[in-house]
Image 1 (tube, rainbow, N blue to C red):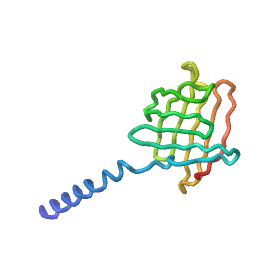
Image 2: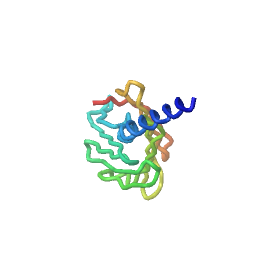
Image 3: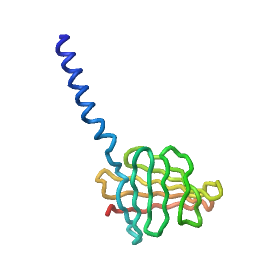
Length: 137
């Protein structure tokens, strides 16, 4: 009985040593190039080492930690900082701020196919909200 337990433990240890580096570098479902069905703009996301980089074809972009701390935004006159959290492998929540005040939240949730994402947004200033779909390119 002790021999089986030791053998199982050794196999589990070897599996962890082999698989953990692969899991640590696994892409998130958010990673890639995305286009809204209603727009020609391309938005690219890349998650790595606890942060996300977003670059839009319009010139807007940021690199932010996924812990909700503020990060500077480039190329957007309406937004100067953003905070981002990743709820799971396929759900990203972004809060846009101007002069330290939150004014827009967006939640991007990739479906199980990994090819489409639903984006819900809420303008905290006006109370307006909406939903749109993005397609992975």
